[in-house]
Length: 441
View 1: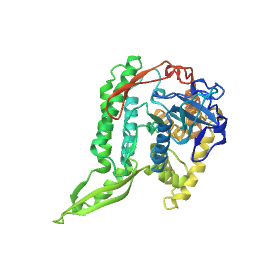
View 2: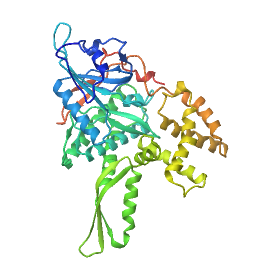
View 3: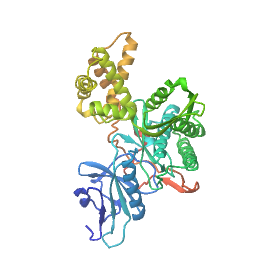
View 4: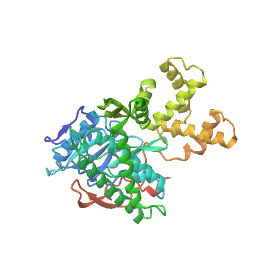
């Protein structure tokens, strides 16, 4: 361990001291490296084992590593969806005393994947649309806390399955800026323009490699983030005016925001001078409405759409057992022990890394619905579980730790915060730890 080595971390993992920091990241031994899919990056990124968990290590300058480390900490405190920071490693030198790049260490987000790993063979239009919608929702959440990204793209994002949709997480914050007073319309529109340009380039890159289903329009897919973002941003922030005798529209506005997965921390309501109109404007909007309710009732920490689906099943369970007047938390505990946990425990141990538990439960509910529709009657859950495990789950790839052979080198334009192309992102053929997406089944 070099004497000059400096480790910055909120809580230092002793395992950090055992990693070969005096060796260039590209030359780390395979016994340390974990073979996981990763997105395109300007820097060399590899995954490694650290004290029983997986971390991502990115070589960069010390200044950029510390800046991104601090930014990820700030975003985490604001409850923004992003990867967890672990440490900054500076003062690295090789065996001959020559300086090596600093390293940023972040935790691997389990059950998440870069966009290229979320489809097999070719990208279908519905998958592309769901990815763009997830990225738009992430951008809205980031802008809502005053974060200017500067380099929005599918490649700088990780995706988790979320009950038929996707949940997006920021994975690269090195170009980002946090503005306490919020963002200007110009800053938000700039992020949108960069997102549109980068997404179009990423989709065209797939098209050039024969990975795009016929009839998919890369420009139309990229344009989708503009409409999706603006629709969601308007729903969260637009001021609304209505007659004083239409006060029910206040409740309707709150319900509409809850349905989108957001809570209102504060709302401004102001009567007009003639007393016949009322204006409302949400002031503080927090994401995760259904997540928070499910976490409070059951302790389950899942994605927003998964939480919505599980809560619907909980409410149906409450109605079936005719205990609508019972304490909600007591019924939730009963649902957890009688419905959710038995389903998860019934999944064979060797298949539990296929999908996270909440996604498995959602898919079991979907499978039960299709089986019941086909037979014209309700199918017992035990039979549904057997069919789901044998016919669906056992044929899926593991999404907790996707492994595979080295992939081909790819390149797409990099758009900076200034809107200009400054080279390209590419996968590093020397890393040897990426996955050929065409081999994922």
